Length: 303
Image 1 (tube, helix red, strand yellow):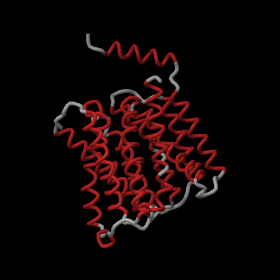
Image 2 (cartoon, one colour):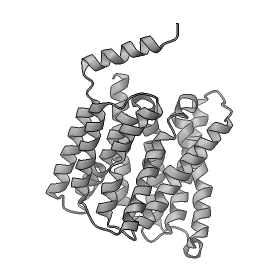
Image 3 (spheres, helix red, strand yellow):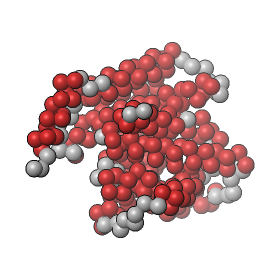
Image 4 (cartoon, helix red, strand yellow):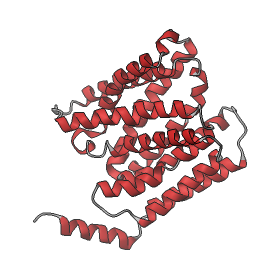
């Protein structure tokens, strides 16, 4: 299996796994949300730190820049995303939120290359638009007030930063360390947020079903998915990897269909087809474009 194919499989699997969390969410609906997320990331942090230890990679001393980026990554991509999402659900329908957050591929297709000092790819941008439209079709447009829209945009921005802030960290720290350190950093933030929002009054031990759900979220949806995503992000770049964010609703659709939680709607199938078409189109690299990239790298390489 070639490295590009492996990277594509990693990105696709990561987002499909994240999509399965929709089926688990109902099992933990009665547990304090922020403390539950802290438990989820704590489980993931332990697993990822064990993986770091097992890998026996050379020790890397974090620079001030690394620390700032990791704190920003955890504060936005993990904590901020959850806070915006929670508040958005009080002012907008899940369909509206899903459609707004579904624009993540477009933002990554435009902002990712700019941050890496290269021009956005027209093909990838078009593909990202198709993926975003597919997400909106699958989710439905929904409704909500202006505040709900703003909060949904905040969640979308945090989701974008989850990838963009990791890009400068990955070459030096690697996918495992970035995943582990981000999860570790998010735990105290979520605990403080839970305390400030008054969730501590409703805090209790999770039931057996809730514990199993948190274990799944921590191990599969966080530890495994983060590791796969950051591995793919490093190799594919944020613009092309971002296309696979469209697979989150597809993962939710497949899970609900397999578990017979809800009937599959025609709009969901059409949306999934558009998402798949967008990803396939965006990942295809014309031969002349590939040759241009190689030439550019040769010209830019130091002698």
